[in-house]
Image 1 (cartoon, rainbow, N blue to C red):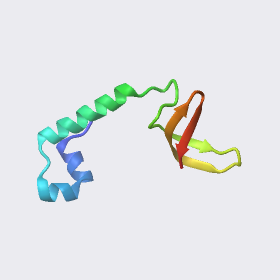
Image 2 (cartoon, helix red, strand yellow):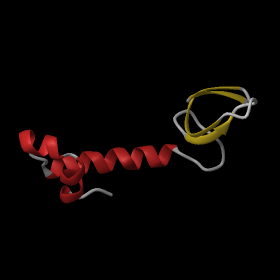
Image 3 (cartoon, rainbow, N blue to C red):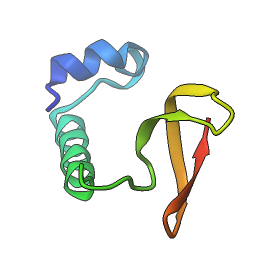
Amino acid sequence: MYTSESLIKINAAFQETHRIQQTDVDIANDIIKIIEKSRTDDKIQVGDIVEFTTSHGDYYKNAHIENIYGNKSSEYL
């Protein structure tokens, strides 16, 4: 979970012009809770970041699952 200090650290430019408030921290933490509730380790889902090796042997450390069609997926490499 974020604190005001941790959000300021990663959003310094925003802090300079708008000032991070407690409501910003609350919103960020609420969004994280929603995302975490939607994720599972049981199966791959759209939006997941995975390690992927193509049938030609090309390796991608951070492939993004764009779509799932039955038991196949499409990745953004």
